[in-house]
Image (cartoon, rainbow, N blue to C red; front, side):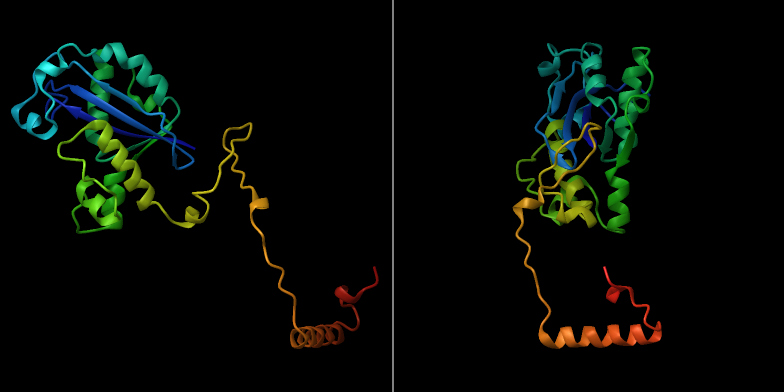
Length: 233
């Protein structure tokens, strides 16, 4: 399963009122493992950031002047996201900005490209009701090192969220998530090399053998001699 953890930084809080994306960070997970095949772009929003937004991300208007516009990275971004499941913290916010950028280019919404969207904020609220569930709070709660996060940054936040998501969803598959994964022809098969493991053979002792024989005798008697375990080969 291919998943993309995505985060954006923007000029402000409202895509509908003209705010634009200034940074996109994407981190790839394949079968719940980081691949290192990430995607990151700074984007020229063709407008200035609000003062409050600058305090959050610290990305100056001057720095963005010579960066590509969204139209110039749209094809690469859509190809990268194609068919993947998105993981976004507070998904409606980022999706609104992505869809607005695509709308300005006459493109369909992002949900037409990806296989689905997981909102990690909704997931966190279900796991930790009544607690703070911002990214920093989740990092502290789940033991994810966020010491390098002094300002918001799309790629850094996506990397942290990837670790947070893996920790939040560490459940029944925790025993196999660190084993080698091999893709089959369908791209989804999971293969674990069991030859690496030496499994002990535990033989029954004399008392256990006697108890087993007693149980078989009782079954044989109750079935009038039709016990299949003692039938001739």
